[in-house]
Image (tube, rainbow, N blue to C red):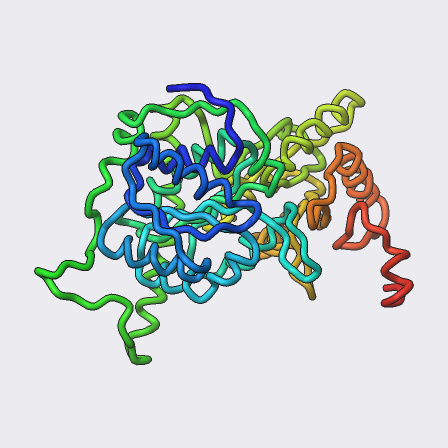
Length: 399
C-alpha cells in the first residue's frame, strides 16, 4: 500500500487503476472533470492499462459504458449534477440490462439557478433507477467504496450498477492522505476483470435489452427488485471481506456515541465529520446525544436504521436534499421503515447545506436544540437550517 495526498476525484481514478478497470468512457463536467483527467494521465504515462473513450456528452458516456460492460469489460465512469440528469434515460437501461458499471459522482446541486457546489440531490433524484448507492465521508472512503461497489455490483446474486457519491469540492477538490492499496490485494478482493455474466459474443449471438411485451416485463423488473434485496447481504459480506484484507471497517449504518443517546442525529456524506464534532461538544456539556451515519442509501438499510434508532426519544434526520412537495429523502424512507412498528421515536427532518452552503458545527447544535424542544412542545416536522426565511416571504408570502 502507498500513502498519497489525493483529491477525491483522484482517489476514484486510482480506484479505477488498482481495480484494473478496462474501459472508461467519460465526458468532463464540474466537479468531476479531474477523474477523466487523472485517468487519461495514468494511461498516457503507462501506469494504467485501459481504454479511455472521450465522448460528446454524458448520455454518450453511459451509453458507451453499457456497450463495454455488455462485452464483459470492467467499466467505470464519472459525472455530476446536470450530467447525471442527462444520463437519466440510460441509467434505467444499465440497470435493466444488469450491467455492473461503477460511476463516481461529484454530488452537486441541480439548476436552476446554476450552482456547481455540493448537494446530494443529483444522486437522490436517481434513487429509483435501480442503481446501488454508496456515499463517502472522506477521500479514503471515496476510493474504498468505489472498490466495494465493484465487489457488490459484480456478484452474481446482484449484477446491478453502482454509484459512489462524494460531495462537490468538499471532497472532489480537497487533498487528503489516502492509502492506495496494492493491485495484487485488490485483485484478491475483486477477482480478475473477467467475464462474470452473460455477455455479447459473436460466436454465441444473443439479444440484450430487447423489446418485451407486458406478459413478461414485470418479471424483468421483479428480478431487479430481488437483486437489490440480495445486495443487502452481499454488501455486508463485501464490507467484512474488505476489513479482513485492508483493515478498514465499513457498515451500511454506523453509530457514534449513540448507545445511551436520547436524541440521535442522522447524517450522510462529508457533513458527517462536522456532525461528529458537534456531538463531541454537546457530550462535553452532558447532553445525551449521538450520531448515526449512512454509507449506503440504496438498498435502503431500513432494518439497521430501525434497530439503531428505536430506543431514542427523538431522531433528527439531516438531509442535504429536498423532495419539493414533501421532505428530505432519508427522512421519508426512515418514517416508512417504521411502518407497522408500534414503538417508535419522534422523527424530525432538517434540511441544510443545499447548493454548497457551509455546514457548521453551530448548525448541528441548533438542530439538536430544536430537536430537544420537540420533547416539550409541538415543532414543525420539517425545518430548514441557516436559511433566510424573511427574504423568501417577501416574494412568496409566509407559510
